[in-house]
Length: 330
Ligand code: NAI
Picture: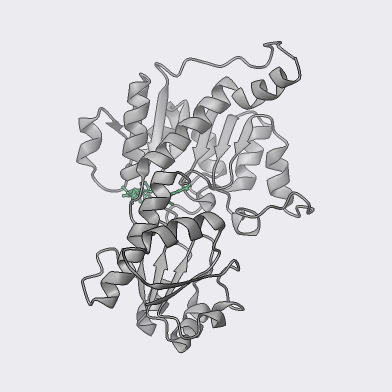
């Protein structure tokens, strides 16, 4: 099949070319993101391969239909950027990579927790400047702390296992029943109790209408004073302005983000020579107890190999008329 990639980075090209040795599709890589202006570039392509911040709304899908596209292959797990109803109406299939490496994201979650706690980001700079003073670097033992996980799917459960290894008490909330959670010692609990009891809260649910701004003024008010909040899931689960208020009042003592609600204008690009216009984001960067990474939790060799293999397999399955096991429906 002819497959066109939007938002393609050198690492995508490397891993997809390698995985394609088994699939033999015709791959075309574009750096530009998919949106209403660029969708025409998919003319005469059978498949479009997109990432988290590409726009796949009804207008884009109409242009893709006119171009002859049969499948939108997401090279990620989340699909909040796709209008699934419009895709179904137009007869375009949508497939994703439901699981590639939950370890990648769970381990990055721990990287954020440990860095914020032990302040290794600050220690690194101090030591390089010959400043060996310890003031301001004090942390706490993770052992014995209570961590609340919202969302106990693949990533939530791996995170729970790692935290149990640290000797944490792990509380969990999910809208579905997760049998495995109790087997690994996660205490299932309602959301309000989780907010009230957790020293650290980490988000592992998808972005849906129900989880949009789940973390807002009201939920923050219920949390423990000095809480640590971690989001490696999707930016808009957090109301960023509410969190900034929480940081200013010191209700929130630590914030670790790998995602940000307006990240589409920022992440995955080198903007170091530009003036960043997003004042809310810049305010976040001004706090020394806020650690932000640019949506890199998934970014391991294991995950990228797996993403490339599964994305191309989805396209191959459609080509061969097989059941599209990773199809996403409205
Ligand atoms: P999953 O589908 O295995 O698990 C999600 C869990 O969240 C499910 O158990 C589901 O029942 C639960 N859930 C849904 N709505 C909920 C709600 N309102 N409250 C509480 N729980 C709810 O997904 P997985 O693989 O664990 O990924 C979780 C999220 O992580 C993804 O949706 C994606 O947004 C994000 N992600 C971030 C990456 C990054 O690089 N930062 C990479 C991969 C995923």
